[in-house]
Image (cartoon, rainbow, N blue to C red; front, side, top):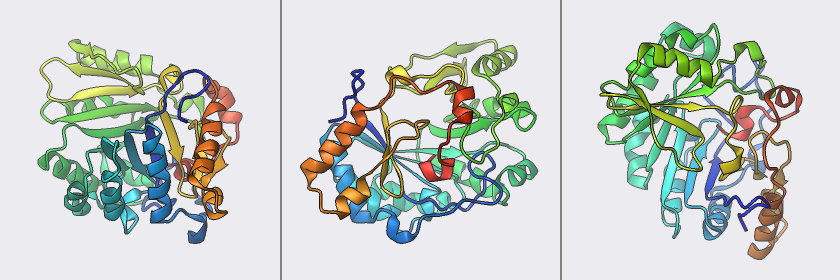
Length: 326
């Protein structure tokens, strides 16, 4: 069911639990905000678990919960618990902005949360407020420390690098890995509806790597898994690691094993592809499990070999990132 026409087996499902978020990051949504789907059009907890069980039965062994901001969904702990009971699922992860994570993490860990990524694009509080249009920088830092104290290793920190905004902090972010078990992940700025993407804001992998190497000559390449989106490195003697997500300048489509289930129940087989298929409508119209599997299989088979180049992507209509799920 989950093998596409190019032989890629999809073992990783990202599930968006909500379109809502308690931040307003500029690269995720336009300043005026986005129209949110009515609650009745979003997947219920039972629908999420039903679909997740079909994907796991088909070979998915890792699920990542995203949003919006997944921690603002009131039943996230119960969802984690139910997912953890799915036979064959090996890993539950979350991507979060960290605002309320410190408070919820004990319950989430007890519910079976294995890994977490925390988004943090600046170490400067004033720049945080400028980017996110909200306060909360100290809370995010506290969540990172809480996760470390609770034994998450590594704690992954997602940093979208934008020229003339936070590219001057790259070395400071690498310094975080000196004494902490963190994996700082520098992400190339990507185009989505409403985020005013411009190629001049893009800081490429090659440029980032050169910058880091100039300050840390002992930077060493680590072995990557064939399905990794990241190119992984460590500075000799540092406890943590540094990674580069090169979606724009060196895509990793040939090893892609990811699918996305959005909060409204639409299945998206490629982050940058505009095509979607509604599994919510199929469930609610009474399609049985075999029918759902067939719909999923057909969608996966239509997945293209690779997404378009960055300039074409900038011209292609796609949802805002907050709708797709981070």
